Image (cartoon, rainbow, N blue to C red; front, side):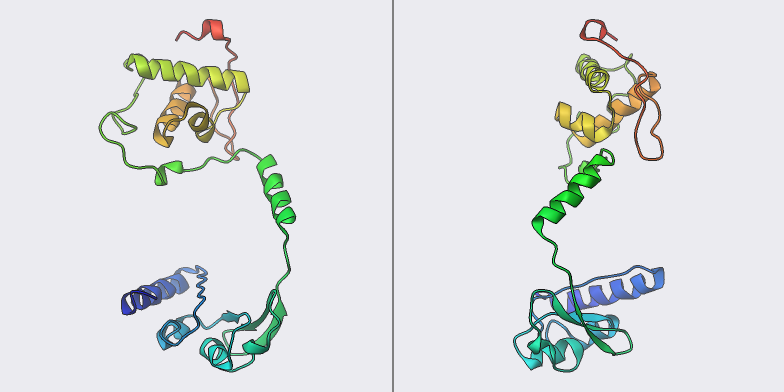
Length: 211
């Protein structure tokens, strides 16, 4: 830990609050030394896992006794429960192909709605703030044009979500969310169901996109 005591105190508070709230906290380190895994850290993380380490001293730092230095690697580990009992277990190997299959399966279940605004820089006035489009009648020509494009995409593709509009129009999350909200008000799309999908209520062609 580069910041030393400051990080140690923050980790201690996090562990204490997580325990009170029923949140599981997982902390990992590649450097099992006493200046990293301090007594305070160990007291707040009674359940520990050690993979193969170089020496018995590293094993004692993590688990309080030696043995982790004799592990075989490749998922071989020692698991110490809260009471101090140590069990040797082996984690399964998951290939890249298996990971890709799981990801592909999850993608088929429905289109995700990412909150990409958390990674976007804050825009100045005239960006995606609350002063944006409050209605088509009072919107600027650029906003009307953007709305028309969004409606055309939704009608053509037969799907509507904030992330979908965001990707196709290359705009920020807040702007895309306002477009989706406006389309719902205009009766172009329905409300989101329990899985976030929306029914497309109208079908428009490129010839009648003038709103």
